[in-house]
Length: 458
Ligand code: NAD
Image (cartoon, rainbow, N blue to C red; front, side, top):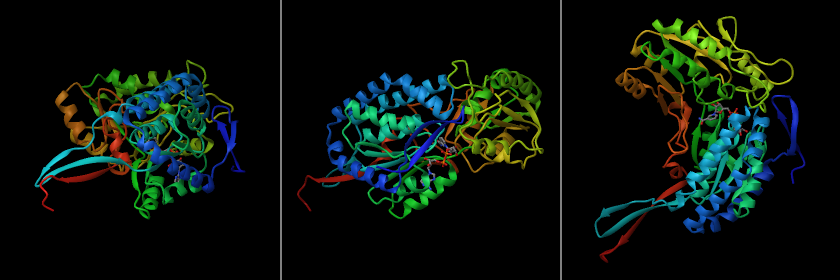
């Protein structure tokens, strides 16, 4: 047992929510050993039985839905309504992938002298490293397809928000998953996460987090030629043309960036508005932003909670400097808690960090553009490529722009990015690989090609 402990804070109060054992290198090694020992039996479970066991996990999570939602709301500082939705998504993710073991995979390919068929083999022990913004939801995007494909997992949640992952591991065991199939190590990235990346018995790392850490994970994984998928940062554009329903675009824009207090990899923190519509857009946006209710995550009427930590609040605050004007500022509580009001900057110089860098907090910039070509150029003027939106009543233009923006998830007259049933992931430095959707298990398997000689000629 680890002797050191991890104090888990509640961002809305700055008080200690829980004190848990802090995992380190030894605990990672023990978890990997347990996962390795459990792998042969787990991957040999018949497909229908593996699906049945995953559906029992779904039932266990349904039974604990409110408990998990309250834990997530308190630990991550998110509104209880959002937390309920996220736990609901985690449950739906397990439900969706519980069907995967029984779906066909592999191909037959015509060749001379026999037949070739491909099968998809599980990788073995898979390491999952996740961030603090959507703790159990993002963990489930990885765990559910990995387990469905026959792998065993070691999950390292973010050290700021490990509580729902730890509770999930108990629920999975109670639901009947064999010991060692799901392992959770709660500890810092620098030792716990880094050991998982370096461990020779870990076949793959599925990572969600910042681009900087993703880069170091890809480099660290090179030593053992580990498979890696990366879901990284973003700086997504919300492109509003003058021929759009500008009122609808403005009413929706706050939730495209202030949801989860802006701590969302898909946050559309650059709102590109065609010049002729800027005044109209801002006047509608003002009412929407000022109406946002920021406060106690457990109050059912709360729409936005605090930031995750004092450090995050300082990082976000640095984007609001005297080079950019604050056009709109919402309200936030005083007193304990890492509060930050929803803030819209306009006008902003082109070289301002808020225009180019991921903010990961409730700050948005409005940037004007003139032509369709300008909008595409500005939208692509970033190292990232995760999400984006296009608002216009011209369907052909909407499709042209959606195709021209270099990002993995675009929405037209909407800001939605993530669905359990459709692929999600980034272009450029937002990462590689896709999660969710019908092909997510591909990232947790190797293709094996088998030739069966039917003609006797060797
Ligand atoms: P982070 O990169 O600091 O940490 C993510 C995880 O990596 C944590 O569990 C952390 O402990 C671990 N880690 C840190 N250093 C490590 C190391 N050297 N080796 C191994 N593991 C290490 O990210 P964060 O601050 O928790 O989350 C915010 C970032 O995540 C933002 O950039 C955001 O855009 C990104 N994100 C991306 C997606 C997506 O799907 N693309 C989703 C959510 C968040």
